[in-house]
Length: 330
Length: 258
Image (cartoon, rainbow over the protein chains, first blue to last red):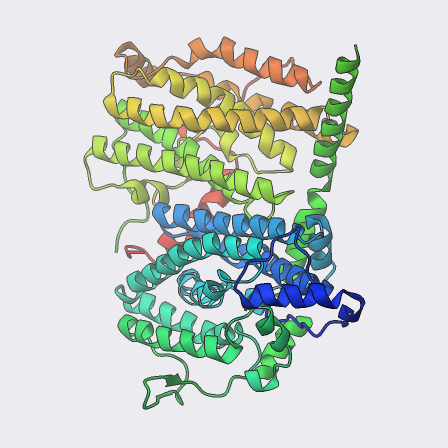
């Protein structure tokens, strides 16, 4: 998902920590209690969450770029306002999540710098281009739909600030998803050209969206600790299957064809999809997706071009504080 | 095949609403270009928010213009199917974003005016314009506060930010005179109590500017040569490029529903 590259197999320094504290911590988790910033927690728990939450935050911020690509070209004023509001929401999610990550002791600046330096990951999905207006509908419908599937269980994550952030984020994502689906409905009820645009977008986004859930369970070695800590409550494949089952009828209602000729429905009603091309996924994670370089370059440019503005704000704040101190001394 | 551009019967009231709608849309569009590229996330949020307010104002004003005209036009036809010569916005709002200082000075000049303007328009004898004014005034007050705070931070921040802010003021100053210009049609609306005479707002606008610019340790230019033309469709070269982007979908796929 937005933290799909997460690898929780961290250096195990728990032997340094008090075994009794660790046992108490796990007992609290098992009792479904929330862990709060000032509570004792294992160093690996802190590290895992810092990485997961910051990767999620980076994804929200980088995710502004593919959709932002259409703000200036949205086809009607209503669509323009809705898209701008949506992208603004994503930025709000990013800010909110960086704040949640900061409660674990790493500053936003450090987290952002790691992303700009290419050391921290964000979701692979944002390395694909938005070529037509239908991509905006498809992202809302599928990308936000997949995000919701992953994030609803995170509302019950053991770490309090993350869980609470997810409640608000999920409400907004759910609105975005409906907005995206409504764009698709309009396109699919429109001209042949518009329907073709919708189908083309689904063809391009379907497989990358399935990859958002991360590697298959069989090859994913890092879910155990996250599960034990109740950061993760469902496996990648479980969430992927839930998503596919929810999405296939939506595509049918739109009159669109899922680009998977081998897809079948099993006796229990689950839609069984074909083998995912994990080579593509690995390539995108390795930096070789269609837009990896553009996305990071755009974020760096905004950061670098804005440096003088942030310096000015800091300089002014310092001057002001100095004047206030001087005034108080008089 | 529909005609490339719609025709608008520009009666004084239609034209009046259209000019303000164009101001709001073009400035909102410019601000929306920042989304995802601002110097800090807080400004991605703030500039998008202001853009949303302005696009909202534009939609109400276009809708009112279309209703007043009573032809077959609507907000989208007015926004997407008029060419550069039919646009009626101020030259100020179509100026490119430039650096952050240029964007904020443009916003400051405009919002300092819009805040006074919409407050005065709340007593318009035209009930729709008065209602739009009541909503827009609240928004403009916030826009002005946001821009003023930035002018002060940039002016009184670092040497570099001071220079950039001063350069932006010097560059954009010549586009401010147009806000106070009135033609014959508008003069009639002013006499009828529908429109506000912007000339009566100028001294208070200058006071706002002087206060903020003074606190920012910047200065207002002495030259009083002012560029004109936006209100009659004589724009800078920048607007055509903005419109080609804004209108690209409606121009590529004419007559479709989105």
